[in-house]
Structure formats: C-alpha cells, structure tokens
Image (cartoon, rainbow, N blue to C red; front, side, top):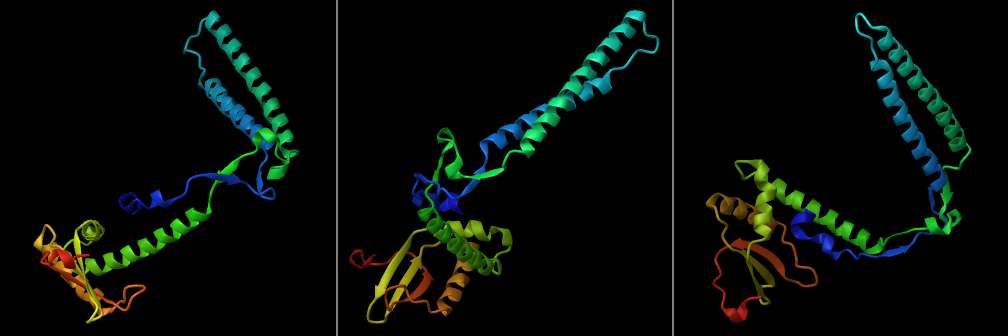
Amino acid sequence: MREHYGLDRLVEYGTEPVPDAILVVNPEWRKLDSQIRSRTSQRYRLMAQFGGLALSEEPSESEFHGYQQQKGQLQEQIQHLDLEIDNLKQQRKQTTHHIPVKSLPEQDRFTRLRTERKHFVDTIKMIGYRAETSLASLLREHLARSDDARALLRQIFNNEVDLVPNSAASTLTVRLHHLAQAAHDQALAQLCATLNETETVFPGTNLTLIFEIGSSGIPPDQEV
C-alpha cells in the first residue's frame, strides 16, 4: 500500500541518542564471532580440497610424492585452523554477549532513527490497510475476478470526485466519476450502496456521507 499512496513521505527522518540502559551486542563479542565464522569457512574449503585429492589408477612415483605432500600440507593447515577456532571460541565464551550502551567505547557509540512519528505513521498505515482490505472484500463479491479488487480500489482512489455539501439536508455527497470499464462502474455502484447503508457521518460535522457515481454537473461556485 505504501508504494501507491506515499505514506512514508510523512515520516520524519533524523536521529536521536540511544538510551544508556538499552542492551546491545558487545563489539568485542561480534568481532570474535566474525573471526570464528571466517576461520570455519576456510576450514570447510580446505576439507573439500582434502577430500577431493585423488590418485590416478596407476600413479607415478612423482605423482604419489606430490599427492602425499599436498595431503600433508592441507592436513597441517586444517589442524592449525582447528586450534585457532577453539581458541577463539574460548575467548568468545568468556566475553559478555550483550552490554548496555553506556559501556560502549566512544568510537562505537551510535544513534537511532527517530521513532515517535514513525509509530504514528505505522498506525495510519495499519488503519489504511485494514480499511482497504474491508473495501476489497466488499468489491470481490461483484467482480468476475476477485484478484482484481485491490487494483480496482487503487483506480478508484486515483479517480476524480466531486464533493457536494448540503447543509439543509445534512449530507455530503461524494460523486465519483465514471471508470474506464462498465463492469467496474457496476461493481463501484454496489460498493457505494453498501457504504451508504452505514450512514457514516463525516468527522467533525453533522453531514452524512453519500456515495454515488456520475459525471461532474456541479456549478463551479458549488464545487469543493
């Protein structure tokens, strides 16, 4: 939904300090863990080379000598990595995994994106998504292909409308212009009828919303 309606543009981008009490991954622990992963990856590659070495059916003396030499070198490298990995694992085990932000060295301190407006916009997104989902479920009942419901809703939301308030009748008519296909107009008409049954009042007024389809025939001085 956000790629169609640009809600992310409302988010305030910026940073703020991270509270001192929040726990974060210890940079020293992360460094050791990264080294262990790197050494383990090297060991897997060496093991693959070790297992892939093979002699021909009738090896010559020089081939056999080279084979033994390669095997020995690879085995020595693997054993050396095993010792490194074990040593690093012991160091990682003795290093605290999470520490409070206040314990971080100054060069490792960081900030985070501001969260207040993001939470507000996330709430708007959730409300909008639920509203769109409800409208889509109503439209599916009147479409030959139910998968077209959300695409049709985007078309409706991007379509022009006329707002016609009537203070005497306490109504606010939302007149939607005709869509490109007659079948879509019919589905939209059914949706309008369902929405009109709710008798929803426009927030902050006493005007009841009325939805209908039709071309603009409103005098310019009455258009909103």
